[in-house]
Image 1 (cartoon, rainbow, N blue to C red):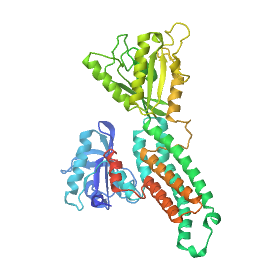
Image 2 (image 1 turned 135 degrees about the vertical axis):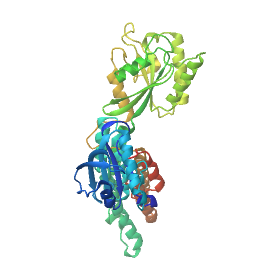
Image 3 (image 1 turned 180 degrees about the vertical axis):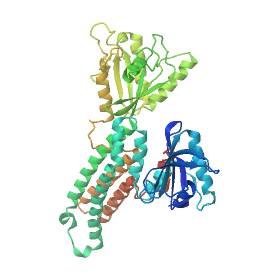
Image 4 (image 1 turned 45 degrees about the vertical axis):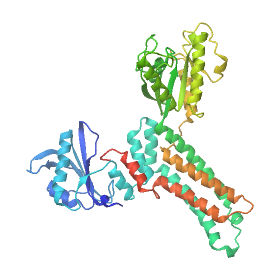
Amino acid sequence: MLARHADPIVAIATAPGRGAVGIVRVSGKAIGGYVEQWLGRQLNAREAHYLPFPDAQGQAIDHGLALYFPGPHSYTGEDVLELQAHGGPVVLQLLVARCLELARTALPRLRLAEPGEFTERAFLNNKIDLAQAEAIADLIDASTEAAARSAGRSLSGAFSKEIHSLRDALIHLRMLVEATLDFPEEEIDFLKKADAAGQLEKLQTALAAVMQRAQQGALLREGIKVVIAGQPNAGKSSLLNALAGAELAIVTPIAGTTRDKVQQTIQIEGVPVHVIDTAGLRESDDEVEKIGIERAWQEIAAADAVLFLHDLTRVGDADYAAADVAIARELDDRLHEQVPVIDVFNKTDAALGEPVLPLEAGQDAIQLSARTGEGLAALRRRLLDLAGWQSAPEGVYIARARHLAALREVDAHLMEAAAQIHADAPALDLLAEELRLGQTALNTITGEFTSDDLLGVIFSSFCIGK
């Protein structure tokens, strides 16, 4: 631990603004005497006490509930005092100021908590591991019910249990390999008698299952960014409104109505989908519209998927078709090859007769009507398929990009280890090293081997008071 972790800390633990109840939290080692000094009495552990919170003159700042949790049986593993008062920002700031005033002469000094410092101390005091700590922030930030339930599973330790199981199997395999390295005179036929190849294959199978669930969990956390692009008046704003179920974007028959992006997050089977409506793509002399078009291309470049919207009522127009071809070529030039472009043909309700799609549209094109809703279900399903989403099993847990990166690193090391095992002349020292590196990558997920720099990045994203 760093020196600052010895300081007792205080912060408002509830969200900014007014509310019925607000909480001030204090955490530190042996703060029981400080609690009695301020409140004028001892508090029974883990019991709610209704009493006044006095200022320096003995006048009550507020009346509320005080709860004292002696360490290590607390959220942080240290002594924790929680004051539940009325949720006005002035009242809570006065309580924090009084805490700091009372502890001015104490050593170490009570100070304001940094973002995420309460949860960081819970991690440092082995109350939770790093994956569980991140799940706390993910639970707070969850934008869908499925994401909240998955974060809850991670917080309860489901993800960590999977990682520990992989680690234990990896350690067992390492032990056998390194024992053979240490005692070569025993002439143990390691690869056959210990069934190293079979153990490694089972480990790789288990890892693949964990990676699949983690990818689903990362999708629940991050969602996908979908940009609607196309010529003016193709119905981009109408499609955004239809997907969102609300009139978010202005819809008029005037070309160039949308000058800047309009964004809305929707959920499809619990997966957050960040849908962005952009300015119509065309040549323009209007300076404001040109800025909007350039911003549209910037959003397209950062998309996970692009809905290229076409107007079915104009597919037979040569000029319109030529402009669509030009946009398609620019999409090819600007987008990474792994970013899918979905051809969406809008206005089936207004097209005369049976719509005839251009030959280049292909069988994957989607026809719909943003006005009537026809075809929207197929579009939603297609977006989930592109994202790699499968019907959410109960076992999905929340995961982050760094977790996926670590799991991919483990997978790469296990593949190298498998190559050594199946070689004609296996190099056991290289096999042992690949297994060691795989275990190190696994340990970064739960924080059993994690740099201080990474901890700083993770906990700085928390709110103060958590």
